[in-house]
Length: 357
Figure (tube, rainbow, N blue to C red):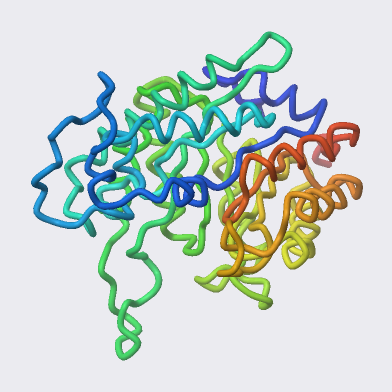
């Protein structure tokens, strides 16, 4: 199989082969620390030239909690978070676009803003990366494509297993719009993450492939699933091995897991991926342990604990990309970067082509 030739971040595969690459931590956890109210989500408190002014002052629905809107109304908040993660040592930072699809934004009646959210989010991340990049340590923007509140293979009605409230084509169209805007805004990498329904992910991968064909661009792709409990399966029923085999056709630069579990509980599933995806880089960004409402971050683990646990992953030769999900902060990412800096990255196993008899 021919090697892929990337039009962006072409040096990233070589970097991954040389050292462990650091992904940033939680965006939502950091946004919560700002304690923004309804008025702030609408843009109050920011008068910069890239703000929204009074544009959303009279929007008829509550918008608090719509974190993706902040890229438009409070770019100062998102910029600050990106720069904190970069200062902590992140090589890759995710755009603030986890829920920036028309399907997800329909919950806030803001589907018409999805493209703008992705464009502005990518531009903010791009500017932050450019500010921190050096020849020795380039920084990369990972355009984040999250799941949607509507799923293609899980019924919303327990009394009707065959019911669906979204179809593949709706998802494909939503993800295509997202990809197009992320790349226009300056994304280097595309990250399909927190996958709990493989059919939703297939729609995203189909849209990405369609965009590559139409645009002539080809960006490195990272695919990250979510094992939801001790069953070792994602929510739509696949084991980690089955999940890998169902998405490997997309030829991702890296395959991995994130969210739902802390590092301790995620470890056996990363070990499984390490066994089955021998010729592909492995990413891992767990939560900071289990939820804990008494903690400042809402999760159990301190930076010292999380960094010690993921250092064990690295020392075992399981990973090429490490970062954090829910409950992780720049302090967690800084501790992870320091802990794994001296550790060798996971080596890929390339099979020699065999001649047919």
